Length: 346
Ligand code: ATP
Image (cartoon, rainbow, N blue to C red; front, side, top):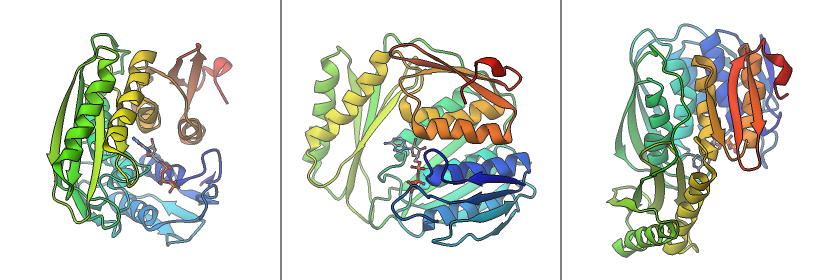
């Protein structure tokens, strides 16, 4: 059994989700202690309980201690089985974060895994749905991992109720991740909104176009009026050729439509101008796949605490290491087999 100190590094929900996913894949039982120790209210929240239950169901595993408020769980994996699964987070808890835990083991199932999830599609501190589809899944598709999605309804805070379906095919021949050309970038974007006046979407779009024009970059932005139980608005931008880079911003009370547009566009410009091949959020979201399937390289502006914590965690399960070469704007990260210890980061 591997014991994982959940307070290590970033010490939030991500260590936990990735731990159960890796346990299922490697068939190593785990104990996770000090869960979400570095958060203002430590212990499991409903969305974490649901994510653990979902992985347990997909891999026919056994869990102890998986209830709201719990700070310790044990997880014993069984066989990962394809088929149909349905999960309801019950709050506006993030669907995409739950899928972060479920997709990794599902790639190792005997046949396609079909998952229906109900919860929040576009909520704070999590990948928005369009980021998940157009950035995260595009990276995976380039690596030859086949995942198909359907958005049934958007879910915003507080009522959630969003619904998606995701079909994950077993991983076959993994394609290495190549560093890509970062010139001649084209930007696409989606403004998603529900129950709000249409001028908000138009103003966000205008603000994105204005901000990107300062760097002579044009953008093709679609405004989608969604149906949802709560009102909400969000913006996701991504580069549609060369490197796949994303940036997003969720609308909230007190933040003007212009600000939503300029924030996401400025973040994307930072990524584009740095020459990165993974944006800052993609690093921690894609790293487990590179480490499991392939020893690739990527360039990024920053290694977040989420990403460095993951490196620590991945090394506990897999004989892999991470070489980090820093220049003044970029880090080049290479995933290698762990015999290559001499230059690795700790
Ligand atoms: P906790 O409740 O303990 O804070 P959590 O389960 O909500 O944890 P984190 O551990 O903070 O989640 O992980 C957040 C994940 O969401 C990371 O993978 C991060 O890359 C991703 N993420 C956060 N904000 C964004 C964003 N704006 N765009 C894309 N991805 C994001």
